[in-house]
Amino acid sequence: MSRSAILGSSLTKKYWMALTGLFLCLFLIAHLAGNLQLLDMSPEGQLKFNAYAKFMTTFPLVKAASYLLYFSILFHAFDGILIAIQNRKARPVRYAKENAGANRSWASSNMALLGTLVLVFLVIHMKHFWFEMHWGDIGTDADGNKDLYTVVAAAFGQSWYVALYVVMMAVLAFHLLHGFQSAFQSLGINHPRYTPMIKNVGVFFAVVVPVLFALIPVWMFVHRA
Ligand code: HEM
Picture 1 (cartoon, rainbow, N blue to C red):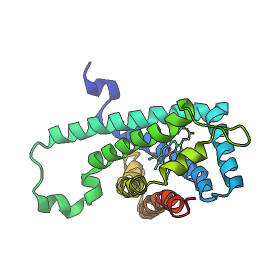
Picture 2: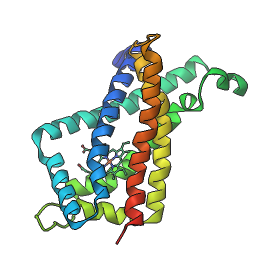
Picture 3: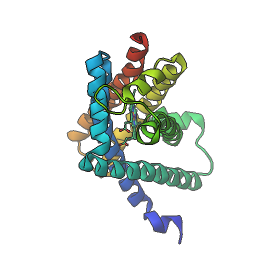
């Protein structure tokens, strides 16, 4: 069976890419809201964060949503690679530089590269936090919950790790800058009145979400014990 037969036509691929991408954007909002609690580094704040992490890893509905999340990440990445290969085959001679820049932004021409970097970030990120939370040998806090706060604070106590997160959040920003509005186009939502609004919301989302994510490691590094 050909690859196209597995995932459908290139339009179907783009459609699924858009749906999984928008679901991942919703995850980013929820994940950001939860992680902003890390800005409260008081002893009470630390206990609260650990209680929150316990809820997020044990509450059945959230667990079910997590499986959908893992599936969406893998599907989005796999589908993205197939689309990039397909585009390259359809256009073996790359446009001359001046043409490429004429009506395509840098982000839109480099989505596969940006997406791959986000995936590399995710592997590193999940190895350090998610894997540790689920299977690592981490201690417990005064309430008996796994002390994920200390794992995160130790990671963000290292300048190189903070720098890595800041750079990766810039990469995420460029990926979202094109990805957000492109998802609506792929879903066929193209309207003279709504499209400019979607573009503006996309730019706001692509800037504010990564900046707030990047603030967390910087804040924790600056205020480390
Ligand atoms: C400074 C920013 C961030 C912090 C402090 C942070 C923190 C964490 C922590 C502590 C966990 C483990 C919690 C758990 O297992 O439930 C986690 C899991 C995860 N993070 Fe992040 N995160 C950040 C940014 C991001 C970004 C930008 C992405 C996506 C591009 C991301 C994607 C994920 C995913 C997919 C998981 C697994 C979630 C699950 O199992 O449901 N994180 N993060």
